[in-house]
Length: 389
Image 1 (spheres, rainbow, N blue to C red):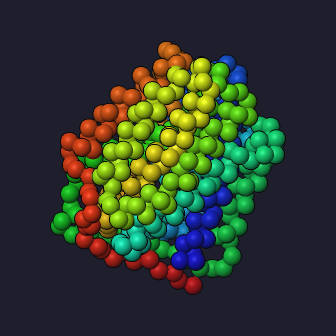
Image 2 (image 1 turned 45 degrees about the vertical axis):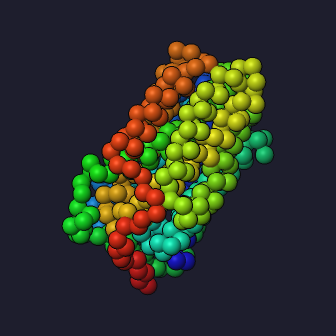
Image 3 (image 1 turned 135 degrees about the horizontal axis):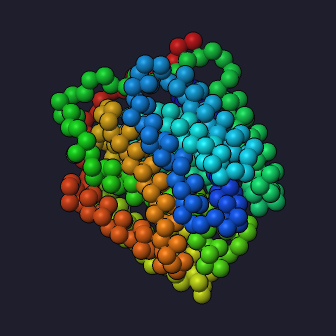
């Protein structure tokens, strides 16, 4: 487990750099008077790049092993950050964002699988919540570095590049090699294909829409409503991440005891109401902060509940992890793109018109196709994790 947490620490440092740099670039593009649609497309690029690579992740992991795939992903992410720091041209910035997204694909999935499949079932919720708390903490730290040290885009780029290089430090010491042996064959009860995983995908997509998809677009929405400007808008990204950080472990702990059905329903209801709150920020700026808290808290909690479901009902099923990650990524990609189009129509009601129907459709898929699990667990299957020196 020491090796596992070393690689986790490496990934978290990289996340801090990305969480700090990319919202600043989005605000820079907005200040250049680019249309909200173009800003939204930029925000969607890393998610699209990640999604395009997910079909190859499991195959590559089995063929090349965890270490080489993780290091490749980290290298691409580091390169993407450096490219983003070195240019202000829109297309080059999009290219840098794409490199970061591709790199994330090859380290995120493996770490999620390791936690979901190796943690004890009776503590799976708490373990998943603790891991997701660390990820959320990284997303909190990144944006808050900007106002804390009064960073400009140039100085923030330098800090991001240093962090990207520092992410290599936890995995440099020693010659140890960590391998994750994904199942090559699934038991007959798990050979279900994608269709039964659709409710799982819909739930993961909801998490992606609100926890990550609005990280970049949220500050743009706040600026266009006149609710906040400059560094204050940047802080909203940190507030979204902070709300996610606060709820992760309690939600995981609670899921161990009462299941995820009722919790997920309440969280989705809160997300729908948050979209109705946004227009109020035109007159009451505090409303956008409240909406941001709900986006981060409820969106992050829903993703955690989805991963708990993977670790219980879909333990050992190699298709489940990529399905959830892909759905979460789709949500993260579509939210800024579609939300940007909505803001192009109306600053006040753009997010509600764009994301409200999407949320309702996804929730219907979750409820109609298959009910959420309450307390039942799937069959536990062993996932080999070993270290060779």
